[in-house]
Image 1 (tube, rainbow, N blue to C red):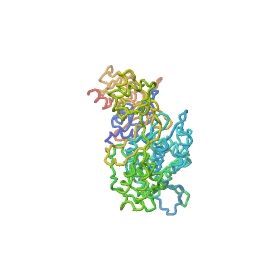
Image 2: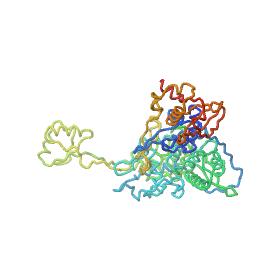
Image 3: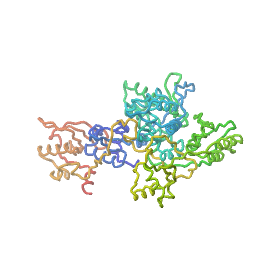
Image 4: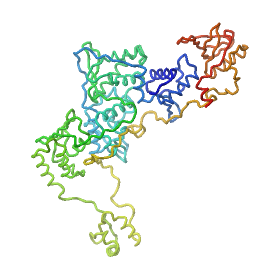
Length: 624
């Protein structure tokens, strides 16, 4: 984060505390203005934050404009203004109330594998068939009741079980599946980039997606979610939840009062949801106080900068193939290897060390997908520590001998309605190499010759229709294969921008990028400045009562400060409002060397000399 002016820093600190990374209306920004800043100075501070990229202007489709701290910038901003050093719990007798699940990356892998094998076809009403949805839900280790505090958005209160809805929503958000025709289907190119990520990077992307998409949309709860993600919350150490919440209240990140109990309950539910994803565990001290600890799989929030993609070498990934056909996959083996294994073996265990089992059925299914049997055997032998056991290798070779001895092939058939036309075509001199006669009225078209046959038949006045009968787009699930693609281009995986197609229900307010509101000239910030006497802001003068009132009213209209002499002291006055009969100006006095503003109500007779104070940012803009 680049250095900000003291005024910009204070405004950003107040916005962070009050709103976290949630959007708020532009016309509400003045409520957070420090007393020692006039309205014009506050607008300049906002413009500085927009220019620095730590604040964004967003616009809803119906025109409402909102400010928002970018979600990826919140961790750094929060840490800069509200540093916190948590103390781990000293109590060694802690009862675990929610254990960590196998991990969201593993659950998502199984959901993607199911989608590739079985597909997620849609009904005429656009919802997923219940049978497929039920089978998808069976692939997940977490359940809906564990996610009640994780996802409370009405957007996910749809026709699907919550845990299945979250899995589909995440696959859509990450661009791994798309709705195509009458089904949700895998996106092979995106999936390959995803599978080539290390599990740590997967966890980071998944965690940031969960942070940004789910959870209560209240600033205090968002602050809690980001705060406990900080590196000082070390994995393996227990932390007392109430201590964190008390610090947040004392720091102004959470409101004091009766709402603290609901914040604790919501925070605990959130942590239990994270536990189901394998990132943390919850427990209770002997006193009954809730606590939590991160697991070794704790994600690290990124700074928003592009992350380098570290390709993993499949040759360095050693599998352990047992004589009983089990394949043990240690942690750290690339997910591309696991994906290929899942195409030719049955996944039995996916927590800690993954366990697959080679079966004849799965081996044959891999051949149906296009994996040649000898390629599978060679690949397994190369990655297996010490090579394949002799008995396993012989069995695989025996299975392979029973596969591929016959092939069903699709051919394009040219059909004639009349025998006379068939005889003409059979004798056509330029079609002898393109057609093979199958019967009196039918010919097989050689591969790659369709265009040539169509051209020659058109010249002879017998052109067939452009549409080939029987060929149509099908929503058939297809598992993409990555065997032998270790040297594929190292494109960095990048999650798509959030939009209506990147979520399950398309819920939530849709935004369009707003335009910068940074003032470009004095006239924009101080309208009518050309018609105001220059001496009002240039010289110290004593003015007639009527003129002094006009100057002060102009300052209120522009939202700028006025320097006045009270007694023998020069002070700054930030005028806020004017009342009449009798005439009075109300505002705040700032004395030299003091930080606190003093509320005041003055008449024009209460001061002597005066001078309008044009903010420095306005002068610079006008002379640029």
